[in-house]
Amino acid sequence: MRVFQGIDDVESAVGEHLGHSDWLEITQERVNVFADATGDHQWIHVDPERAAQGPFGAPSPTATSRFRCCPSSAPTSCASTA
Image 1: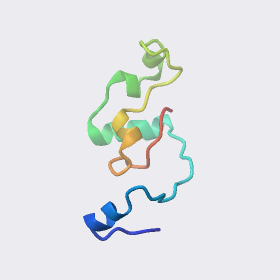
Image 2: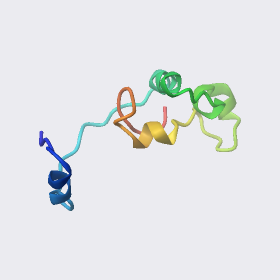
Image 3: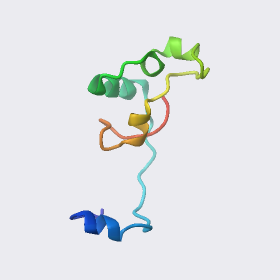
Image 4: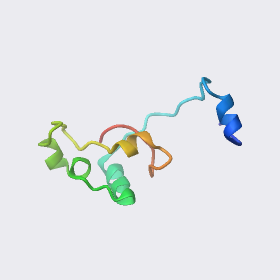
């Protein structure tokens, strides 16, 4: 794994492929843990029954965008929905 020692190292890597990780399944439990950590308990994320009836018609709740897009702040990793 490449380790950046400072902003200059990061800037020098612009455009360079840095690799990828394996897929990670985002379960409802992971979404709930993230909701607890961030205080974001909106029903669209943590209430499967209500989310199924919500405006997106999703079969399950939608992971908050902070969870999907900010792996440094997620307790496990980032992905899409449960």
